[in-house]
Amino acid sequence: MLYNLKSEIMKTKALYLTAALMMMFGFNSCSLDVFPSDELNSEVLLSSAQGARLVMDGCYAMLKDEVEFLGYSSGNCYARHYFQLTEFPGDNICLSAHTTDPLYEATAYMMTDGLKNVGTLWMVGYKIIYMTNTVIETLKEDDPDTKQLLGEAYFMRGLMHLHMVTLYAKPYSFGRDNLGVPLRTSTNSSVTVRNPVGDVYDQIVADLRKAADLMGKSRGNAGYPCKEAALGVLSRVYLYMEEYDKCIAAVDEALAGADPASKLDDDYANYFINAKTSKETLFCIAHETTDDRGQSSIGSMFLKDGIGWGEIYPSDPLKYLYERYPDDLRYTAFVHPQFSGKMNGTEPLMKVYVTIPATGETDPKTPHIYAGFDLIDDGAGNYSFKDGATTYTIEKRMIKGNGVADPSGEYFEYHVNYGGEDCLCRINKDVTLRVGFTIPMIFITKFSYQDGNPMLSSPVLCRWGEVILNRAEAYARTGKDKDALDDVNVIRTRAGIPTFTSATEHGYDNATQIVMDERRMELAWEGHRMFDMIRNKMNMDRRFAGAQPFEIVPYDRTHLQYPIPNNEWTVSGIQQNPDY
Image (cartoon, rainbow, N blue to C red; front, side, top):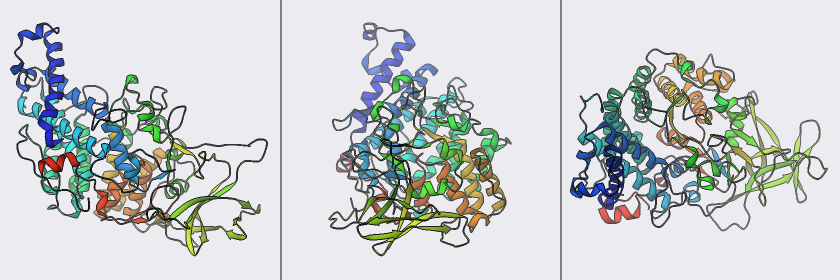
């Protein structure tokens, strides 16, 4: 953390410096005695390409390694916290029950400045930034032996600042002058202030541009960045800044005339299993078999296959969106209902699940509960259920592509009027319930099965699927509907579903609506949805089953930005975010 960053970094730095020196010069533990301790510094270490490589490898390792924070270490790693803190406050997930894991606070907007996930992310992010600064301050741009490594340092510095400013500050679209996060562009940490959001974004752009100019091809698998990775992340930054023409130009530069379809993985069903080596991945947190975190992995909350918790499921609105085309590869490959089949010789379980108004509920965060009722099927496609002596008729409501109810709509959702409220519901005929709960178990496997291990993956931080959709949104925002649909169609063709010829097809009103839905389906659970909604000033409708709050979440809600960690603001004196 910045509050004691120098002392924390010196520990990390000493570890990598010592390891690097031993590898470069072949020292054993005794021969280190001949090397004065006050010369263990970045200048000595980075005097060779091998030393700089070790420092950058240390940065990548810190994304996945478990670290100690406030006495916690098991499962305490950047990768796990990043994907949970970016995804769980959104509207793509259903939390099946309350949990003691701090992920619940993120899901329910009940974060505090003393939680380990909030503090760990900040601490590790700024440690990595410090390490990149040691490389940037030492290497020369005109040295061909270290040019790639210098580019990697700029890339990681830009990426970490992007993570910090999007998690702990308001979106750029809310104003450049809002409080951002501390900018660290040197190893001098004598002054700590929160720089304006605009200044932070300007530096991120400069770093990623420099990284793209310095780097070429990756020096290994997708766990190492390359020129296209820098341009891909840069396209996201420009999109967030609403610099749409620059976003388009960054994607064009990355493609270098190539067909966008040629950049996608042809075996999409197995893409996330093979993300580390796939041509589609621009940058990931590369994991090896020895990096298996078991129940502490990212995938453990999405999947229960022998060891996982399996407590996070797709939200009902997202499932309805996928089910417009049930053969959508993104649905069939990564969303897995747990079918019970016949139980004890009886017919499969038939239930309807409704998020209904709670009675006698004292917690204002949960004014509704999720309830399951025996489904009544008349055989003619009409469904109902009984609650006590009252029979409720389930409406198969036709909707337009934009989700508006319309008798002439092409898609449908199930609704029921319960207690005077219009409640979304789901028909379930044979999906297993989580033991002791009424939520059907529907597992997600985007973070599973690398090397056959259900809890292992190399989580993706940037890929071509996102970059193409970045350009699609930029096209749509600038009135270039045909170009936007061409990019969307590349993604839909790979998913095996019908393409668009018009921005007003299938009940949509414009190309932007189409792109937003496509981003939601393509990038689900990868940490984009919350940012997409907030930066575009769109409220999130979370009125669906689950232990998360039942509410429409305003895009300007204060707790959508995380608190500055207590151990930071109480020591450095920087301003805390509002209402924390």
